[in-house]
Amino acid sequence: MSRSRLSRQTMRALGPVVIPLVTRIAIPIALESLRKRKFAVDDFVGDSEDTLKENVKKTRSDIEDVKEEAVARGKKLYDQARQEGTEFLDVLLRRGLGLANEWAQSLGEPKVKRRRFKLAPIVALAALVGTGLVLASRR
Image (cartoon, rainbow, N blue to C red):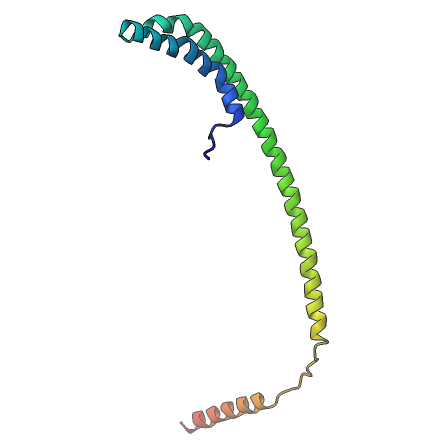
């Protein structure tokens, strides 16, 4: 089943323009053309031009109303999505902190390493400097 791509409000806004076009122009032109066996457009266009202008003005004002309503709905949806997003992030944060605390408690207390002074690097550095001085003094 296919759906119409035009919304109900769009069809309502276009109705005052399309219905007079069909009833006052298209159908009489078709009937006259069938009767005379020729296509006579100019006779019918002049008769319905004023009505069409009025309906176009009315449709423009309806479109402006719909536009303002769409902007208001968009703002409302944006605010609602922002609020729900903030609430969702808050829930994620609380659950994440709870899981992190549980994980940290399951690890237990960390072992404290005792720092000791290492003598080996100092001895190696002294040997290197001493070898360099001996080699430099021989020259």
